[in-house]
Length: 410
Image (cartoon, rainbow, N blue to C red; front, top):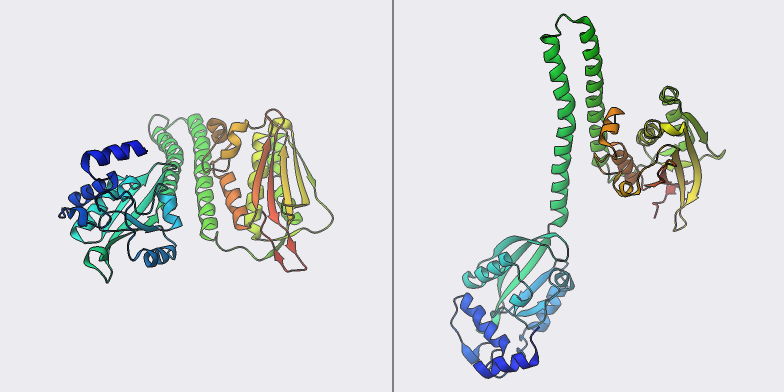
C-alpha cells in the first residue's frame, strides 16, 4: 500500500500524483493521445480524481443489476460497481484505476482491446483467490449523451461459470470411473473366453470353474449398469418431489423378507423394531425400497462379523422441530474409520476397494441412497465407531394428514 510519504515523493519528482500518472499510462496502453492536465480527473496537483458527472445515474443503474457489473470511464477508473462485483474483485474502489483491483491478465487485455477498438469483448478467466472460480466477462463500450470526453464508458459484466465447470468435471469423473468399473469385468470375461476357446477347450473341470467366474463377473456388470440406470432416473426426476403417500412399515418388512436368504447365508440375525402407529411419507415406493435395500444389504455384507443387524423405524423431529420418520440400519461389525465418513456417499467411493468388489459392490449404493432421499426432501446420517459397528439413518419428512402434505427436513 502506498504511504503518504511515497505519494508526496512521487508528486515531487513528476509534478503529478501516482493516480494521474497511472491514468496516463492507461491511455498510452489504449493508444490514445495524452491530454495532460486536461484529462478528466488528471489536473496537476489533484490527489483525488474528480467524480464522473453521470456517476449518480450510472451507480443507480448498476445497483439494479443482479449480475456483477463494473463501469469504467475513458481513463480506466472505476465509476461505479454493485455488491456482486465487490465479491468478484474485493479491491474495487470508486475513482481508482481498475488496474489496481482487476489484475487478471485476460481481463485487463479485454478491457484494453474494448477501450482501444470500441468493440465488445468476451473473455473467460480462472481466479484462484480466495477460492477456485471460473468467470465469463463481457466488456462493452457504452456512449452516453453528453460531453465528448465523459460520454465514453466501459461496462464490464460477469457470469459465474463455477457451477457449470464443476458439473462438467463431475460428469467427466463419473464417466471415467464408470468406464473403469466396466472395463475390469469385461477384461476378465474376454480372458476366460479366450482360454475356453484355446488351452481349456477340452478341459471339463476348467470349463466349469471358468464359467462360474464368468457368471460372477457378468452379474457384477449387470449390477453396475442397473445402479447407473437407477441413479440416472433419480437424477432426471430430482426436481419433481413425489406426492404419493407411502407407509414405511410394509416397506421395511418387504426389504427384510427379500434379504432373509442373504442374512442366513452370512449367519446374521436381523431384528426389526417399528411402532404400532402407521408412519406415512410422500414418496416413490420403489425408490424407497431400493434405498433401504442398499443399506440393509451393506450391513449384511460388511457388518457380518457382528452377526446382528438392527432395523429401527421411529418417529422423530428435525432440529427445527419438523416431524420426520427415521429408519436406522445398525450393524455391529468392524465399523468405519472416521476419515472415510464424509465421503461415503460419493459415487464409486469405497473404504476398501478389494473388499467391496469381492462382496459384489459397485460403489454406487450409498450415492443412490443419498439421491433418493434428496428427491424426497430427506437426508442420510452416518455414525460409526471402529470396532463397534455403524449406523445409517434415513431421515424422511413425515406426511401430515391434517395438512395433507409433508415438510422438507431442515
